[in-house]
Amino acid sequence: MKLFLDTANLDDIRAAARLGVIHGVTTNPTLISREKGDFSAIIREIASLVDGPVFAEVLSTEAEGMIREGRELAAVDPAVCVKIPMTEEGLAAASVLAKEGIRVCCTLVFSAAQALLAANAGARYVAPFIGRFDDIGYDGIEAVESIADVLSDGDFETEVIAASVRSPLHTVEAARAGADIATVPPKVLFQMAHHPLTDAGLAKFMKDWTASGREV
Ligand code: G3P
Image 1 (cartoon, rainbow, N blue to C red):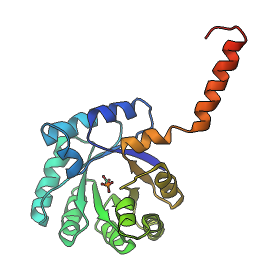
Image 2 (image 1 turned 90 degrees about the vertical axis):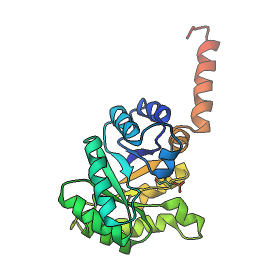
Image 3 (image 1 turned 120 degrees about the vertical axis):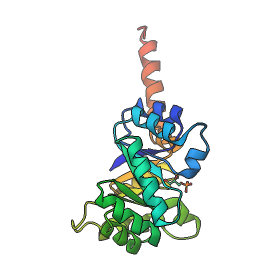
Image 4 (image 1 turned 30 degrees about the vertical axis):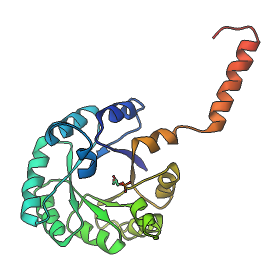
């Protein structure tokens, strides 16, 4: 399972890209609202920092507006993948944009039924939100598993991006549930790199080395 970074913060993207583990960046209106500057300029800058798709979301709620915004966002950079909310209007817009060769991600997906519709509309990606489903007492990982299962028959190339990831365990469980990609916030990505036994093991290696009278 590939990892994307879920943020629009350029410092965090630089720090994560330096590790060589990021294959794309996802944003949403909330994440963009936390950053200063022009939307298109931020997206362009992100695209210059990572190899892989950069996801930018439309704000219109009617298909016509989504299509217009989707075309504009796709023109910002070749790496842009347009995020469209999973609504009836969103499906109508996604199918038009997909036919034009614009990559679309249907976002705010919570069921296998919605994922099937998105795939049939030509969405390149569907993004089920794990944490937000957990928040209301459902099992977000189970939803990812069900979505990955119904899309696994090979009829479409739609990939599953596990989103609203809140912990390293969510990330691992998403992989086990069959997600193709997990988009993780910077905090979770850096948490994933650490383990207390790695720190303890490293400290012991250093202590034993210096105790032998050798220099580092
Ligand atoms: O990728 C979607 C993500 O940004 C939402 O995460 O934690 O706000 O539910 P969260």
